[in-house]
Image 1 (tube, rainbow, N blue to C red):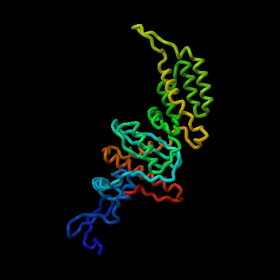
Image 2: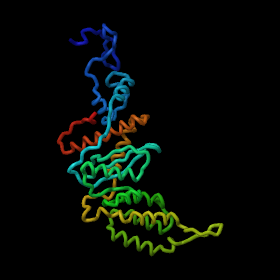
Image 3: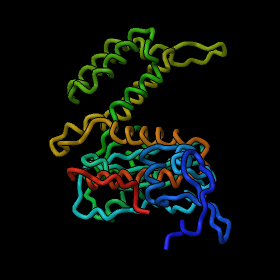
Length: 318
């Protein structure tokens, strides 16, 4: 028998009819109850705020918050048997004491590994690739963004330095509008990086060092009589190039066909994550981690259904 037979109308809230139970005095609204799964879908994928959801369902913000706190969301390492490909590896941070390390499959954008970290350690990257391989994935190569100690630790794989990040490193040292000719020439060469082969770049880089040898080697004398290189930022930029040059053109190798020359794909995922988090500002760390877990669960679901003609809009497995 319907509960409404024992209830009286008790006004409306936000345009939704309310009822009051004659037996116990409890107030309630008519209609289907908002399930945990649908609430999480609205909150995560539809990017609705707590206030918006509460308004739409005629309940208080506190009610939605309590229901969200009950939802347990945890990203679990998937089985990856039979998969192989190139892996993007990178981390992003919120504040100075915690962040997320992500491994992403180049072909499908599928999350292969997700871990919360306090700092970006070489051991974290080593653990990530070991976990991926232990779960059945065959790594053909990795795309990284400029931590040489990580390149050294993953020496058993083909390693590609993100060319976009290489350009950013040089711009930070030289600025976008350098004043001296040697720096201008070096910046122009770096801007042409995606268009060049390894041999073309190496020849142009060698020619630049010969042409501007005097500028590169010029020294100045300090007041105390000591000497130092005059154009230290230029030399610093060249040192960075020398460090990463062995990894800038890995994607052009015959055994690395299909490898990207940037990690733009993983940067795009981090950008989407940040945008979603910005819709829910003020989250405490526990809730922020739950949201991030849910984000990657949703991404896992989308990548798993990417070949489906009409994937279901589920948010995550709760």
